[in-house]
Length: 252
Image (tube, rainbow, N blue to C red; front, side, top):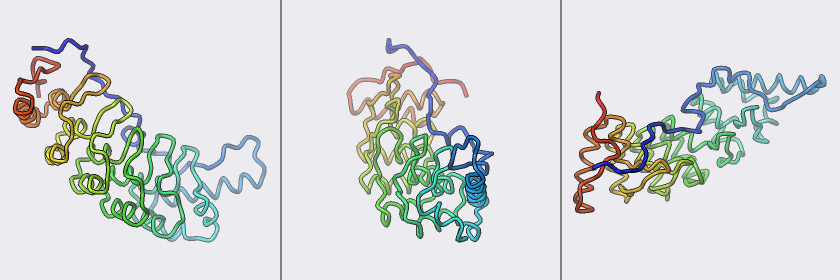
């Protein structure tokens, strides 16, 4: 039997890292300057070189004296990224560790897409940095909108997801369209993360603002093993068979 609610197949992600590789990241700047003075132009070029060095993972370059003032005040690029968020985003591991350990920065500072250092570290699967940010820098594991647990579930990283939950992350935190980590884990076929989230109390009956449940996500994206397992779990929990949003699983 079909649920009567309309079916929407598109899930929109506002997080920039899911769509953009930032190929021109080395052109990032901290200032928007119109008719810039010579001094302004000099500063712009220095910041240009700083973010270029970050993208290249050149830790020796960013240690130079001329960059200290920008790193100390958490200078951002024109896209709103701090040096640390950008380094993690670019998977510049040497620079990421250097900045995380030596620079007095606000680890909860967000870029224009609402992403912070912990979210970015979870997304790229850097468990060592995730542990450092939580245990040493006391990064917030929860935030409104997109949160670290969403990114860990999308990545399918069991270790990072476990660390976040054990550190107090809300299992059923809601994304901007009210999707949960369990929905993302189902969508991407991360069965071990699905099991972990359920063991930690994730709500199988939760639905987002498109009326999609975790089971619907699994069915939509042809995650047959997950879908069948969750439907069996649904029957045991609620004593009724699950009513899918679509009649059949999609073709491979």
